[in-house]
Image 1 (cartoon, rainbow, N blue to C red):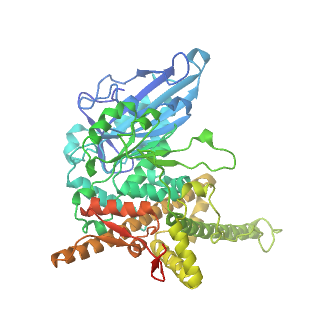
Image 2 (cartoon, rainbow, N blue to C red; image 1 turned 90 degrees about the vertical axis):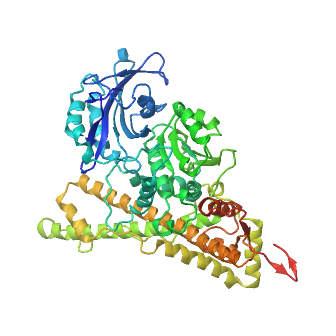
Image 3 (cartoon, rainbow, N blue to C red; image 1 turned 120 degrees about the vertical axis):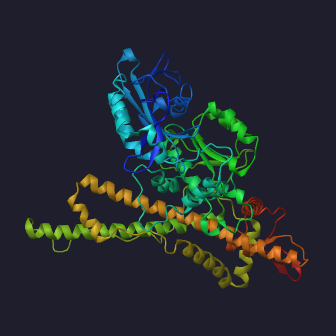
Length: 578
């Protein structure tokens, strides 16, 4: 893929709708299947001026990153990737053609932008890139629109000093700016009035919550531990790329607890590589040879062969294929370690997931109620002006909220760890001794979940915003309403995840501080974490995996090894029974 308007040195491209400028080049390619229609595609590179982007190697690199395996089976896709110090986005289109052209035309158009944050806000180009690829897919010789887009958005190279340097996302020795960016991103979506574009990756967080269910919590914990996470997904990869972005955001350390960490190196964010393939194996091997927190990453791929390279990753996430969905049966992702051990949600994760979904459903019900109220007002106005036969009391389907109904997830047994014998014995003993005490434990847990959800930015639309929809077309109104809902859920889930992180780190910081004080007094400095501490962290006191998670967190963020966890015990007549 050659650049448009390169002239031997990098030009710059403005982000649509923003005052931020980034280095960029525009890319285009056409692909036509040769012989049997499989993954064997011949690449034809086109350019308006034939000049390359002098400082950036494109040939034999960018096309593989922006065109993952299996993409020819899709009608369209949006692919994020990283190339050298640039973030990239590519729009792909597949259209039917004559038999003489093997029945298909493929095309991809993309840009490279100098990153600010994780993606250089490249998603702001998404809508326009999709329009461009739709216009050239059947005639890739027509590059006038590409040249026009380049000229409209690029900034002269001589203006580079006004732009400021952004930090390369693939730098092996990140500066303090990268850590500060991680802290900024941790709080960046907490605004009371956030503004996210339609194509912002965070807008898919609601979809990820439904896709993973309670598995989203152990996945976030793996990201907090700076694990190398590989997401294997069938094409198209847009959803998987969004997942990469969102998990990297959910793994950030909130600024409120960052100063309590004793190992500042752990503040380096989980590096999102987005779409990768077999051509990235050497690079991943280099990262694996230096196991530092700043070399941790998360990426997605359609190349199954990477699954076999277990030394390159720590956690493997297999997303279900769309074709594998059985009617009436939910297909869940499969998460496992590089050694083949399944990663499941804890029983605490399961209860927390239900509480979170109930709250989201409650807000959605309030949103529907306001929408129905607006429709009633419009019906009354129409009745006054046009329809004299309308009923005095508008009929409406039952509006009862299902927020308090318990609906068990399909395949729940496969998602969560089974209740341990110790947990069953302990709760059974409490029921026998005092049923009220058992309820008190669950009540404490419910109160903790309620505090996590307290004061989160989950506003239902106001009457004024709903009424303003009358001035718009029906489709525009629905689109704006969906974007408002998805944005609200995104802000809520990011804030919720960071509050969970704050619970763990702040509790650990208190425990470490006490241990340090005891060591100064000459006492034993071994850190012991009790079941009550695990509950304060919002973790499952009966889960071995949560116990191991706390030990790993203490080692990574506080430099404390040899942490011990002690669970609940029951003594009966001087004998320990569990």
